[in-house]
Image 1 (cartoon, rainbow over the protein chains, first blue to last red):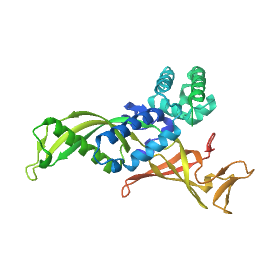
Image 2 (cartoon, rainbow over the protein chains, first blue to last red; image 1 turned 180 degrees about the vertical axis):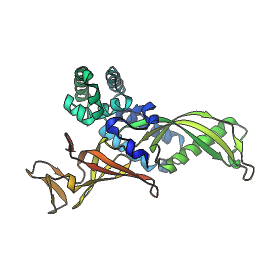
Image 3 (cartoon, each protein chain N blue to C red; image 1 turned 120 degrees about the vertical axis):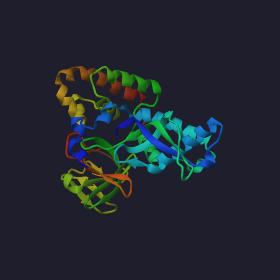
Image 4 (cartoon, rainbow over the protein chains, first blue to last red; image 1 turned 90 degrees about the vertical axis):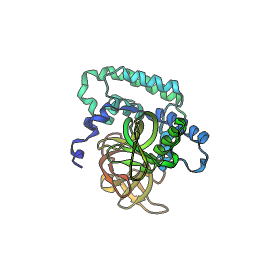
Length: 139
Length: 177
């Protein structure tokens, strides 16, 4: 497991192929898994036993912790967050955890510390998101 | 937890009984086999937990295995996966409370341990049911509660095909939510 010494999410060292991959936020995954569930129920001859444990647990988790229930809110959030120069990974962590202050955001995503000039810009999108989440949130 | 959508290349093996001149049925057989294979595989050390296959990108030309008659199709597809990383901040649900610490579940990760050594401000209490209570009695860890924690270490267990995670709540904004 030599990769473990180098991998550290706090410093955004997570392996090259993951940096290039597209990241999905909890709410996006909730929509994807809902659609898959519908497809499975329509398509299978044996509906009782098509879902693996991983699928089921992830579905429960994502439904519980997704902040925005409808698709437009999700698209807006992604758009707001992408206006800053964030890596995909950081974007998703912020979208999932919805920090309310700059300090909380830096605590959640320590790699943000390296871009302090952009910290002032980050505050506005964050407050927008918090407003969006409180109006849409129904958990 | 961050879900990643990555492209994976695998080989799907189709036994001769499912080979059919109609290419549609063949495609269906390949897709079903792939879904079955991924759901049995559950997780891997390299990619993490396989949550859901999203799209099938390409199916290559099949290679016939002379001995058994099976055909091997190289397949490329996109899959949503999730992998726990050191330093990541997650929210978990408390599953078991013990004297030495608490066990959490977060999404597909069933095996997360928070040692009581990282919870110095909390006392273990076993009156009606085991809980950890803070010194001022304001917050506590009990079964079913949610905890925000940071991952200290991750280990891949080959025999169970899952990850074992060690966590801590030492840090700002961490602890019960």
